[in-house]
Image (cartoon, rainbow, N blue to C red):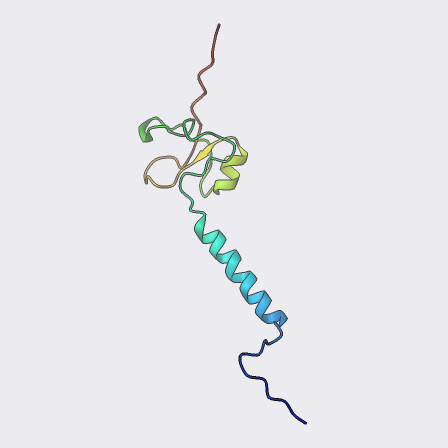
Length: 95
């Protein structure tokens, strides 16, 4: 006796398929994090430095992560100015 099953049958997921989808997720995650305006540990206000007032805080080919590890802002959206630059200091309250 043989019984026929109708409808889709589930196929076991292979290790190659899992690896492929993991790679897709990683690539999408890395691609969605743009290199402009990354302010890890800093407020957007601190990094709102006009291009002409930016004080260089990095070195050639510094990555956003390296820049942020130095306590600096990274914004590569404006060419011809430092992309890794010192943040504005938060206003201090005096009572």
